[in-house]
Image (cartoon, rainbow, N blue to C red; front, side, top):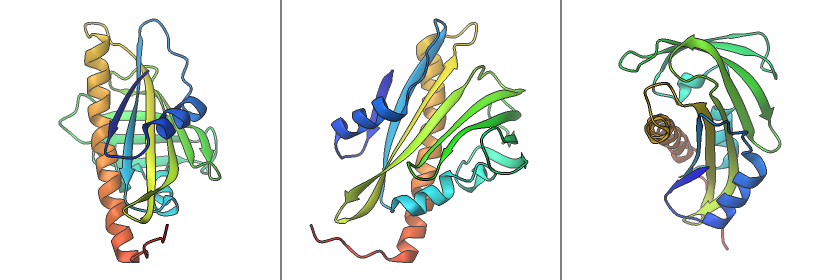
Length: 188
C-alpha cells in the first residue's frame, strides 16, 4: 500500500495507525493507497462531519445529493449523486464500520454508474497538536479494482486525486468551524 502524506507530524505515528486501522485485502488486479491530512481542528469537530454517512456533501465537493436509507448503522445504504464533470453519475454505498470511540468510518461501493468496482475505504481520525492547538491527523485508505484499459498507477492516481480534494475540503470546513469556536492554545 502506498502512503502519501502532506503536511507535518510524525510519519511513524501515521504508519502505526495505518497498520492498526487500515487493513485491506488487496486482490491481484487491485490498487490500494493511504493518504494523510493534518487538520487544524479538534477530533470531535472533524468527526462530527466525517461520521455523517447520510450527509457526505457537507465536505465532499463532488457529491451533489445523498439519500440514506434506514438508521445510521452498519449495513445502512446511501444513494449518492455525483456532480457533473466526473466519469460517474451515481453511487450506491454501504456503511461497513462506524466507530465513534476510535473515530473510524468505513464504506464499500456496491453499485452505481461509475468505474470504481469493488471500492472500499477506511477513514480514521487521530488527535495531535498543531501549532500549540488541538488538531486532527486524518488517514484515508482505499482499495479498488483496476478497470480494464487502465494501469494500477493510473487508477491509484485518479482515486488519490479525488480523496485529496475531499480531505482538503474537510480541512477547509473543519478549520472554518474551529476558528468560530476559538479554541485556546495548549501549554506543552
